[in-house]
Amino acid sequence: MFEVIRKLLLSGLGILAFTREQFEVLIKDLVTKGELREEEGKKLIEEFVRRMELRKEEMYEKIRQEIIKFLDIIDLARKSELEELRRKLKSFETRIELLEEMVRDLKKGVRCDESRDINQA
Image (cartoon, rainbow, N blue to C red; front, side, top):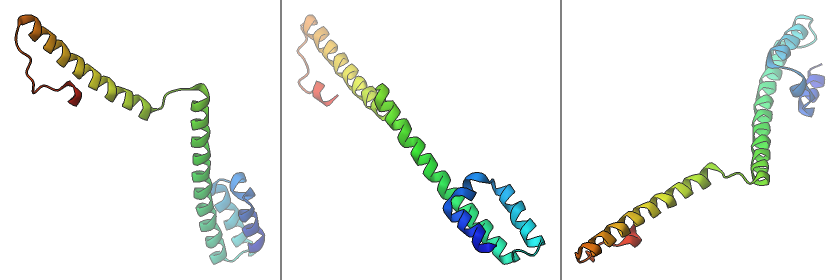
């Protein structure tokens, strides 16, 4: 019986069909009936939990990849792209403010401070 359940787990069918609680009930029932030793049951439960975690991580990664594909298809900007645009916009705003200040100074007849460099903004 141990090998049958183990093979079921390894095939992935058991992981998809059971929750942890259902699996533990099944194993405890088999132990109670004497069809499975207690230590084998514990090993199966541990393996089930480990495989569930692996499947969950694999599923999350697949979902993440599909979302990325979807975003590419609909041409929606990612957070990192928006942050880069915000950074560039802030730089442009700073440079424009410096240029406006220089124009005001020129209109007043004040010589522009050569130390101001709009390229550093």
